[in-house]
Image (tube, rainbow over all chains, first blue to last red; front, top):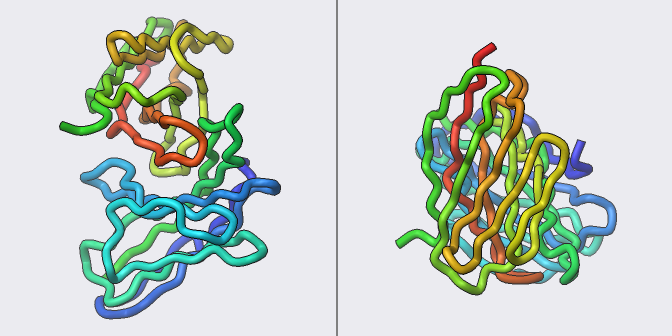
Length: 115
Length: 111
């Protein structure tokens, strides 16, 4: 158990709908990352937050948005869903200090199916 | 050119074999190098974490980093069926920077 929690575990919805994925980082970790993993692609970095502020953006679609709240949990909002958005969505957290910059821990993921 | 290149495999070896997994990268600013293990679409699990060049050993696992060649390796000794998973390399320039992942190598260890 990495200490990173994600809810829900599974989500089935229809095209055009909007969903929210939730992540709670490990205790003490200030940085949260969101990734998308499709069957035919590797781990795609979406967005990073640090202590409530957006830190880096990757291949995140305009239909997707995220935020990190004062209690450090984060939410990833996916709207106008398309069939191609079906994937595993992982959240990861990191303490983000120089001595431990490489330590990033992943949650169990949310499996999104868009029908 | 991708930041990180990793042979996707699949790689199939008999139990007890030594496994070598490799990644190359293009960004000389990378200083932290990680290997993750991912079982059947579960969350990736941090296996090894190395700073700068050199070797790091942890049980049956050894991570090597050669910054001059921009090449990292993970060796698994006495491989076990439980090692069957996808192995992802990852790297980062420094604290607060974006993580870059390889596409993963699928490994099967046959009993």
